[in-house]
Image (cartoon, rainbow, N blue to C red; front, top):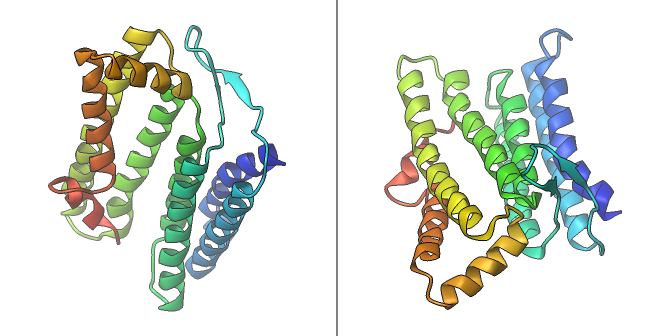
Length: 235
């Protein structure tokens, strides 16, 4: 059951995103696309809540790049709490948009759902490379929103500034990942972090820089000053 739910909280927003993106071809009104996004985000949040109360771990693993190791999904209580916060925040934001009858572009819903599904996947990924790639897609979706919604020459520089700020966080994450890989020779998140914790407690100054990299990545993603500017670019 855990495996099905884990796949669903990633796949449902992605499927809804793909269907919403075909709205123009199927003559679906933008208001209907908004409601599809609202329903998909709400159902995803409920599935994440069900996964939080489901025992067992999803046995999913694929080999993406030779030498990088198997990549799969790992359910932890902490990651699920973060997923719940993201999914419910998305649902409430979309609900406010629908309730106030705010007009949005047709592609806003699909891009939002794409970001939601990929973000859920990033938080469930048990491999640093998979998480990094997923967060790159999320950053691209965030940068696309100003281009989709704004009818202004400011849209392009605003999108670029958002993307570059988020890339600073990704640079910190990538630096930390590379240091850990060089020291431990692996990229699976749980064992690497256990190794890093022991090494740091043992006085390793080099691995101490991983803390700096992860802290920078978290601070940027959370919109801490002075990186909060990217979070102000929403419609």
